[in-house]
Image (tube, rainbow, N blue to C red; front, side, top):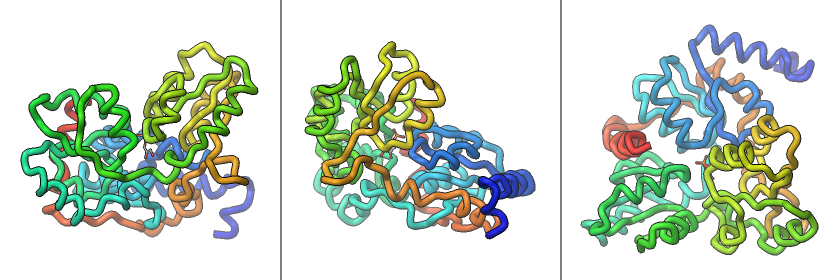
Length: 315
Ligand code: 13P
């Protein structure tokens, strides 16, 4: 391994590419991944696009450079394939906030409600959901549900409240928060804006309402990228995990992107430590040793597949 790490990662990348070919494997990466991981991926996308891509791939092995719920979604859509996550500790604060037992209790309290879960949940929670959504299709999904129905929406409360404000519909919200998006500093963002003329604030809907209100644009990671491509401003405060800036810079090399700072006194950037757990070394080892494989019970796969497929149909 030592030898593979020399030479600007070149040998490591070469070995990863060799293994990919040998094993008919692909690497799917989320926009929050490290730059070098995004660079070797066969496909980079937001959580919806990753699920869509995973559903149609004919590779035998899928390496998910993202977090565990994304790898689980790929496995649910491809039960016969080997799905690998290079670090099994790459979790998600939202998914962790919504445990099966507790969520089931809420569902039992509102027996007639339609249960909508954000993809940022584990497979067992999806298995008791009616339909899934991501930040790029949440509005479409909620609008597809008749207004006579009560809706349970979880686990992201900020996204839920944002959708409520767009639809004028009250939902029963789970009180989960993304530990990254919930910590951006309104005060520091306003300060950056006051010092930069013509700068735009672009935010992910997992942010707090106070930030969404002052934003020029709100959208999923891929919507934010699409926005900066077509918008004519030159400078943006990016209020989401800063990994997304690699793709923005690739698409718009002449524009400036300032990562929004968190509330923490001496920290300037809000990186997700779980997303950043995935490294080139771990991808190499994952492909070579076929670890860590996602295993889910057949019964969970069969049940969890339905709400994901419903979401993909709508998207
Ligand atoms: P996207 O659906 O925008 O990719 O967001 C995924 C996510 O996990 C945000 O925290």
